[in-house]
Image (tube, rainbow, N blue to C red):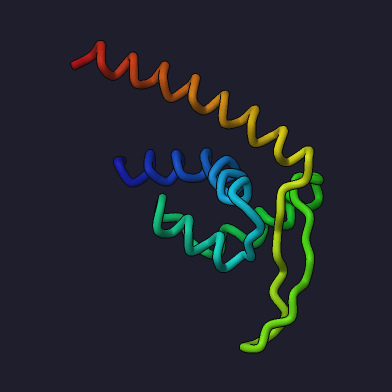
Length: 108
């Protein structure tokens, strides 16, 4: 059961985590995935569909950059809408996390 809650928490926070990574600057999918694997244990396979959805929703913009070591890389950056959504989600997360922490302190 512990694995189940970990998976659900990661899924629920994935959008926010990607927006947070991109709020620091432009990045490409593999780099985003590597950052998330190191930070929260999310796999690379979950990133590509999420990035397509974020692009379709107008949260990120892309550009292709030629690479000397393979195919061109697609770089992502937050749009103004993406920055606004990130700030709102970050605020919501902090409120939620504070409420959960308060409940957990009261229990034990």
